[in-house]
Each structure stands twice: as C-alpha cells, then as structure tokens.
Image (tube, rainbow, N blue to C red; front, side):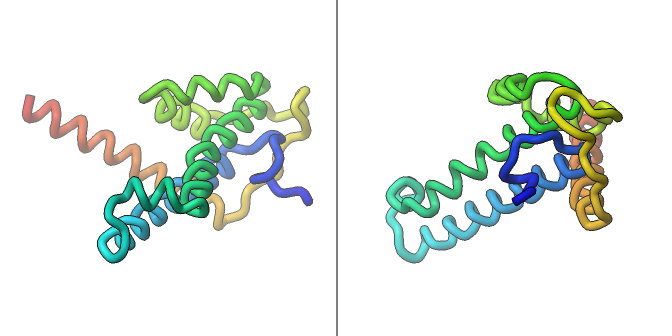
Length: 149
C-alpha cells in the first residue's frame, strides 16, 4: 500500500495543503455533529467526547495528522521531521503552515526519499483555494484592526 496518509515519506506542498485542509474540515464536521448530538442526547460535550471511544479516537487522530503532514514537508525540504514538533507551540503552527505551504521542497532526491509525485487538479483546488481565503481573511482582519486602532 503506497498511501501518502499512512507513510512518513516526503510530501509536496500541494498535497500538504490539501491534506491539512481536509483534516481540518473533518475536525470541523465532527465538532459540528457532536455539538448537534449534544442538544439531543448528552448532558455535556465533555461527556460526549471522552466517554465515546469512537469520537475521542477520531479527534486524537485528526488533531495529530497536521503535525504528521508538517513532518513530511520538513523531509521534503531536506530537514528532519522532528522539527514538526515546533508546531505544538501555540500560534507557531500557522506560520509553519504558511511557510511549508508556499515554499518548494528540494527538486531532487534527498536522504528522506524520492521527489514526491505531482498532485492532480482536485488536490490543487483543495490546497490552494482555502489558502487564498485564509490569506485574504488575515489581510481583512489586519486592515480593520489598523483602521479601528
């Protein structure tokens, strides 16, 4: 099985962006669905998350997958994947996400493996379209902050 999600080989920036966006979309969907279920059946969200082994396992996997993808991007840049642990520091993951999502990896084979395959059009759309909205949102927030300051 040669799945990018299950191995720790190098990953290109488009796949990194697309897989990260898919992971966060799944996280948002789980939070939304569990919030809906909370109104119906459970007394608190804490009870729902931590007493339901399926939901808690999914949340743990989806929380750590972006760090795994970040480690793969570091390997594509020729660095150690352990540098992804810097992403655990609050507010640092977003900067690392932008850096690793915008800059190319090494264009040749390195000690971490072969050059990653090119991403298809579907992954390019899932990778770049949300990134454009994220960057635009940051500029809009900064503009309104400066304007109202």
